[in-house]
Length: 334
Image 1 (cartoon, one colour):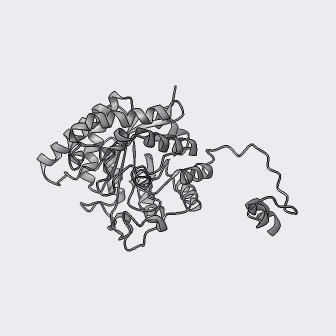
Image 2 (cartoon, helix red, strand yellow):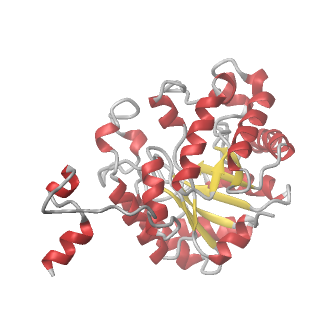
Image 3 (spheres, rainbow, N blue to C red):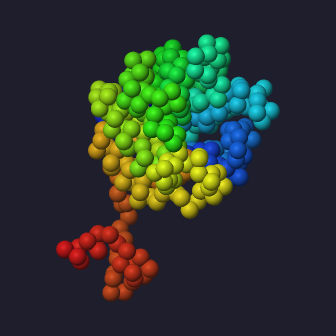
């Protein structure tokens, strides 16, 4: 029987998966702009293959592709009547790939309908989350992730509704180009509020790369020293004055030259562990090679078992010819 997410986190850092919508858009299966996840219905095999890539790279959690799978968001592309089919199909695909190797997380995301101080808007958000949660739970998710909330108020509603399911709950907020939530709360204040609301795991996701996310994670760790902390940064390099990658003129079609290297993402994983992050995942722009290097950096993948005879006197590859073996280079320079 699989251990639940809280049991696994108590044993040490857990490796999450990478980004889905932007990667599937690059492959031609998601439409840039709305970024709605109908690929779960129109081409489930494409989604399945990306799940497999993340699983084989070392991800210990696969998130069902139900980001933006709410009725209001799907209505923008004429799919409001496919909400049940889409949410169920996305969870089923993730579960089939996960098997006994990975946990499957249901997913709630920002709704774009939240209005601070509006009880009517809050009730609409509650109803939206409840509708998705009922379908995802019926398909057998292991825990719930609520993510990409720039409004702490909306994140708190997600925590409230997710906790009512009885499943472990992870809620992550995002920071746009300001260093507070949309209503002006600091990362530490937000973390405390989410923990008080019953979230089992709290953290930061999306919009910013590791460099511009670490300060928030450190603040959260200090604010809630006994809570589990999660990080899911984007794998794109952004300037300090515009840390939110979606605000850059390159978004969404010219991001390729901003993508972080696998070495960058390995360094992120090590630094995240050092500052006490428990759930170390990634978001937009993070592909399987990134996740593999993160898993490697955290000691989650076995070393290559097949022997390889390197002969620098008689090289049989450019790797040998140009002395690209890090271990050999280190040995020669000592």
